[in-house]
Image (cartoon, rainbow, N blue to C red):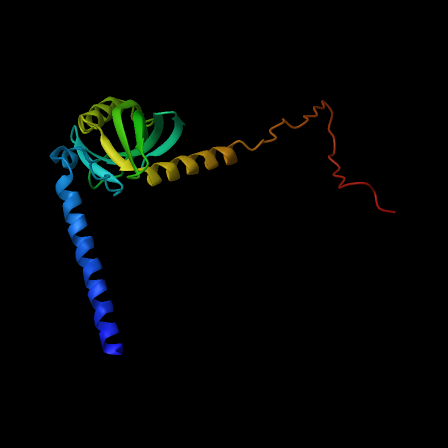
Length: 194
């Protein structure tokens, strides 16, 4: 009787497995062909810094930092290094903005209408325009998909950093005592101790 019970249990498990496989197969056959085309593109990999050549200069772009996220509009900045491939680079910053459409189930954000608002290279302003044009030329016309977690982490870090930068600093000028006669400065450290 015990062997018969084991055989029946194995048959039941095998029946469940076969039924599951057949159900999954039937469900995938029922999906319309357009479903495969409409799925989101995979998120771009976060391999930073990214580098390229622009107007004979080597440009490295570092990981962007999201500064503002209002509804579906984000903006931020990314550090850039410009210079000869084997020389000392000149550093600057690229400010960008984009529309962000969030797909929470897939954990992706589709960025469209990506713009490079400005590029600032303080020590060599002549490079700013060529770097901006080069960055614009490398933006995908259809936008790009990035990880929602990556953007949220960048935004949270930026907000936390801005809180610490708002600490009040006491920069009151010191009292200046001016005398036209020779004087001696006597330092008194607190009240006299008797």
